[in-house]
Image (cartoon, rainbow, N blue to C red; front, top):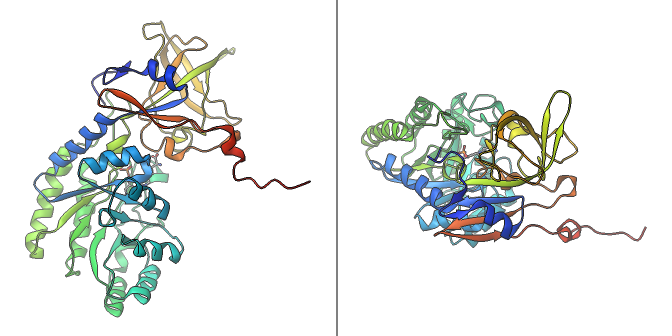
Length: 410
Ligand code: LLP
């Protein structure tokens, strides 16, 4: 977590002035923080040829993608639409990895036609891919390493019962399909989950890849996925990327010697690059005292930030308008007709109707998971870059809710 506990400003621009200029709720991103996270990963892995493939799904605003491009790194996309967004941001096809899960084969064909590397996620997809392209299109295979890891069951995706990847226990079958179609496998991939604290897990995952990799003579890279845990509040532990970098790089370099060739090491961080860079600024609509609880009802809900409800995720919340007010106990809740509780029993400086509150760690899987539930429009997005606040997505308007509806004459 950055040194400042409850920032009033980013790069000298006050969050209050952003909310005044662009209204609220508004997502605000600190571009410098994104760049510094990229640099710290680059430095932790400086002993290997690292390629970062930012997990677009975490925050897919084109301007954020452009920052990743500016830092000289690439992207991981999970849909053809994400591939197209990445291309809009200026990425060339060889900078994009496509890691779909269970999509129709026509999407695979579309990605191949765009010249994008496909990460094959099942034996049956490998068969279809082989039948369609044989050895003419290089590809990567997503291995499921059977490792249980991640901050929550919903985001643990590398275990034996997960839908993702081809089980490491099916390695023989994988090799048979590769042989049958002469598949040109240039990469192997794993992603075990999200919010993984323990550096050893990344090493264990790497070791599974290194062992499997000895069976594939044409490799150019190994992709260890994303999943680094970030801090969600002061004192909250985060993955020690220096430690992961040191351990995984050493094991990787030893593997490369055994393999007989230097490969690239790819990583696909989402949260690590953008989570802490994001702030959701909202307003207190109501302070409601009941016999047991004081609720703060804000002008947003699970339609804009679903992580607390979906993953029991902790998002720090502070009062921007009354920072030195007396600290009181609140439940912070949304305006949606569901139990959309953002925070329970939080100590927050006294909240008055109209105060601006800020949710931290709102950069990753915040806006990108937002919806129009309850027929609400989605918030604006602002990027603070080079000391200035730039509107990078206008607040949706009511017309967006009607635009694609076909109205019958009834
Ligand atoms: N690579 C692959 C193949 C992935 O599926 C993901 C995330 C990542 C990389 C990036 O993981 P990260 O570094 O962001 O942990 N919506 C959930 C997280 C879902 C992650 C899905 N896959 C949340 O808000 O916690």
